[in-house]
Length: 487
Image (cartoon, rainbow, N blue to C red; front, side):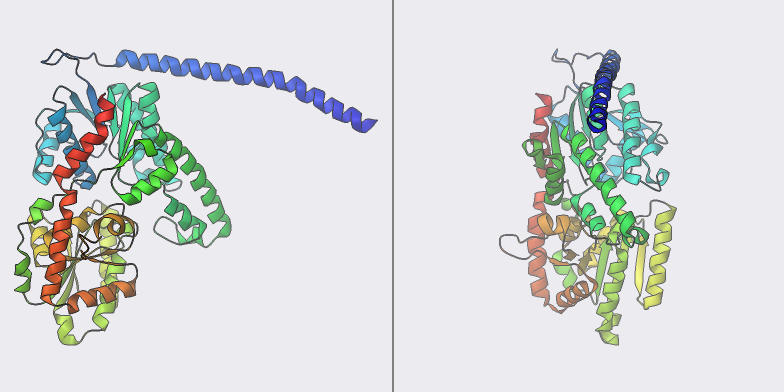
């Protein structure tokens, strides 16, 4: 009898706990709902009263979340081209940029955009300067960086929302965790332009396969227990990332590679479109292709910031392998030039390490750090090969620029270069792809062994193909995608 009696007692105890637990859960849920409703109403009262435009209609407030808007990179070019496009169509709106660039004025930011990108806006832009940008910087989170930066972006987004409540909110830097904040608490229509997913299925595969890469340290990849824990962390983070991203009313991505990953994680095919980033191809088209036939020797030029994912070490090793196949006379006519930007001390240290690798391998390499645009243009104008080695580059603006400048591009056989850029144009080759030290060396050797006429044909095809990435094409596609937000 003791067995059934114990079972009955256990059931009575569970039953007695069920109702209090249910009541507590409902109470907590109601309390949270009331708090969120109160915050929503409080935020609503802070919303700037709509002003009437010249046509008597209320002016919508359109805000871009871009904490590093003065950085001068490809993402910033997207921001300014997007603002220019919207101002052309929606002249009656008020445009706001949330930025953490407190050390400069709004006028200086706009002058910088005009100087770097030759982009001048037709109407004024209001800047909301954020105090807590440090919360999204990776140096603050040596461990659990993805989670730390994402939670930090929520706090930074809250600061932005409290300072200015817009009608339309567009995240143009990839801070997806701010989307539900502005949608559900701010009552905004929300959209985003995704340059690179915060987490991707490729990152999950790297951890699952215990592969050592720049974002998966060897001490983790070599330890099955740590690899399993990191995989669980990544899977949970990916689920949350998928939910916050799916809150967006409109989603733009910069490439087929990004499209595939966002589609898999966010499950949002009805709101997702590819809008290639605007590349300043016109600037490079005045370089005469035939002038490359007049110079002696060949230069291989790489352009890209000195960051670990750009894999400059692979470029140096591949060039070393190429030189090993050449005679002393041939080696004298070859040079590798690494052009890139250094953002901070870690980047400068990385350049020093690369120079040491060159010395160890006995490879002569020229480093051109933070050079002016005209010098970059001159180097590309003289180069035979444009080199790119980043694995799973989301798009590859530097690859497009090399092709527009008339180099024979040699890019990594993955990501944007593989799927969108270095693809046949009207059935003709536009460049080459590789994925290892040996395949890069073999491809460079093949390009250098080609006749000038064959190289010229590839350059011409490449130039014709990059018109897809012009400012004009971007504006048309961006306006088409964002039309939903203005209805």
